[in-house]
Image: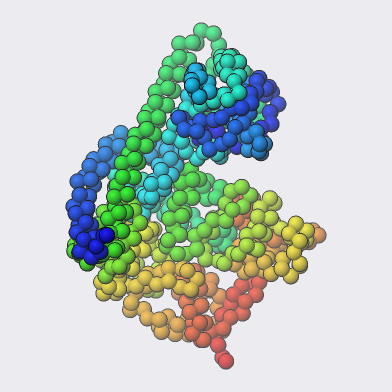
Length: 241
Length: 382
């Protein structure tokens, strides 16, 4: 029968003392690994994926702290933390236009462009992992599955299942109409309008009431033609948000 | 097994079926794959496997993934097998049943025989390499991703061989990297298990561990990236590292905060601090943990979370009342304001101006008019 109290504490103390040489040995192994393969982490997105997945399997988060062994010796931290900065900056720069919603593809392209042609390759998996880390700082970073990829949200706009489903519907053409929502989702007109109004208010959708036939609700995040031409903040304010 | 991708099993135009064999079980290296018995099909372009019972479970791999293969004779109670050694996973591989495998080879186990013929046909296809001459309509990721470009003209055999050697060497380097990574992870796993057992013991009876030892242990957990289960702490989840960081931030953020009306979104702080550092960057968690220590360190900054979930760093000197009063003043003066207009007035970000207006509204000083034209705030005259 195990006696709790002093016994358990002494064991812990003893184990802690044993831990120290283990840490030293592990650090040596890590250093050895780093000296041989540090470049691989920086250059090879596939290797990064394997690395991350293996860490997850054993219950380790190599990105938890810049002070971590993984960060310090493999440089894996700096890679993702810097990517985080670049992601925030791109999202901030485009927020006036797309309301804080951007496709993972567009984010990827713009981050790559910002990094310049001599920078290390960055995959979409890298972006997704960096974004997951950004979530801890509040501010509504999230990812919405749409059309086989994701929309990255960078503002704390409340988007529930209804909003998400309409976004997914709009993904094919970049816009959606009330009729399309009613036909595809079998919703009442009120429900469709409620959702669209919310998207308009949050600046995620723009209304084209001049469209032939029926009013079209455009999502700048999904509408690539709009994003290729640079809209100034003044112009953005003049359009019907 | 991580070289396979999900497939509908339909052959492309220009792709021909060569042979198929029932009763095949797949192996991931030496381990049985987490799949049942199935049919293996060899085409001119791919190796395809389909579950016998569940036809929708179908996977495929381009033949270009294959480096070489060999027979493994049957034994007592063991079926004959073909062992297939593979190039590393190409970057553009479509998802499949395995995200990752520590093996660079698979095995086909022939439970209903047929391995002799299959081996013969596989040899033929790997020699002819018909997939290179008749590309299919859908792009099939190549095994190596190398853009070396293979020419089949006679007389360039020497160059081809050099390219092949270089490719094998790169593959070897990458394979070695993966192998070393696996070995490293095995050691890391031992460390994790040891720490978990210590952490649990500490949790049970913390009295017999000194404060100093606990702090060192937590620092170690931080270094390994292990989540800290020892939560009962005087300084929150922070360590000495975060303490130092908090003090640094206290110094560094004073001026930027003053310039921005006393408040900055945490993401803004993250960018500011990391851009200034250049290297040895802070993780988002480092920043949050450090900011949580402002209060206990009696620094003139606070981490604050708004209802919306927005997190900010705020100067103590900029009190709540001041912010609300200033919001009310500005709105009253202009009659009404949107978050964008307020942002322009104060030179703040739209995000933070909105938070201030919401705060003033919460306290009953402002009321809103929420329409499709935007959210506008008015003085609350009720």
